[in-house]
Image (tube, rainbow, N blue to C red; front, side, top):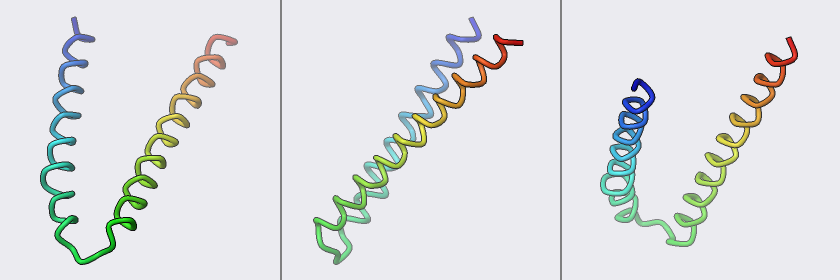
Length: 71
């Protein structure tokens, strides 16, 4: 039961974050006088960085699970 509540709360947090990013922050960034290509490259680089951080976290958690199972 606690797992279901955790999933719902994480979904709400993710939705809130997406709303703030896409409707507030990116809208302000679009109005700046900066080349569009630079903005796209910056967003893409940030997205790739966040994906790599997530993958590194998953990889480290798997390593911890293997170490715990060996004990």
